[in-house]
Length: 424
Image (cartoon, rainbow, N blue to C red; front, side):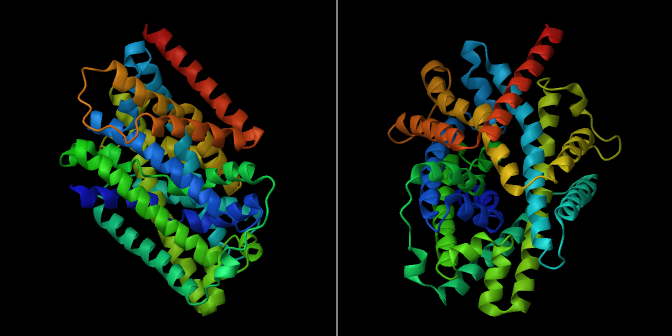
């Protein structure tokens, strides 16, 4: 895979139904149409954090991503195995949160066709998780064709919204930003949602063994994909807010369908809803497939609970890992989308993101045995800025999410201690 393929792979992971699910929540949390500030703040964080991944990927270009980066960066201090375990352990929560968030978004858009209560939405989301897990409970062929088809549908969906909005766009309405005395606090809170949408720029880091000259290609692919997706999302949200009032957009759980319906009528709205349901279901298929292989790989290497290394006796796929992650996602389907996203990002901040920002500096200073062909621009400022911005996002979140993330980190440390004592 060359630069074009690597960039496309990253963009496929980044571009999805996220904006169509979170735009109302972003407007509500911001209290106005000035979410452009949060998109830009998230873009700065994504670029800085992307440079962290770029430097780590160039130094450790094989497959494995953060599992390898954290293990090697903290190895000189005797913490390599602990950090690698914590990464895998948080996947056991992050994966169900990611799966259930997509399923809840699916249920929200399903209610465009059939009015659903909150309980019915939860049941519909859980049913989708069960169905997707069942689809994956078999030997799985390559997702290449499906990924390409999904990307085409996603780009067509986003392009349709942008094109429709440009025909009825109002610059004055789009940039009618109010005076906000709590602007910085709101930016921090809404940036959490923005980062959920930008997430995925590290996808290519898991494919290092399949990329030509990965120490050069991966940094370029990461930066290029972030820049392109930032421009796309900025355009998308600006066009929507320049077409319909932000209060109306904030009150709509099916913003894309309502938007297209207002511009082109009910039939077009139903078609848009169908497209979003397809993209959401397809993305869940890919998410569950990818995450189910992470605990399996770590357990196979002796770095996680041995039961997850088991494979199906006939199909030879990691069925224990698949069923566990699919099952863990079910109770989360009955929570709100904003809470799921908050927990998803906050858990990763305290269990992975901040440690990687420090780890890239530690790796460069203490691992002279590794070739490190790429150094981020203005090193180490992007890593330090990324660290500060992640902490800012964390501290701007609600106390409930903060306590949840810190409690989960404590449980992970206790779990590692128990495993370490038994192995010792």
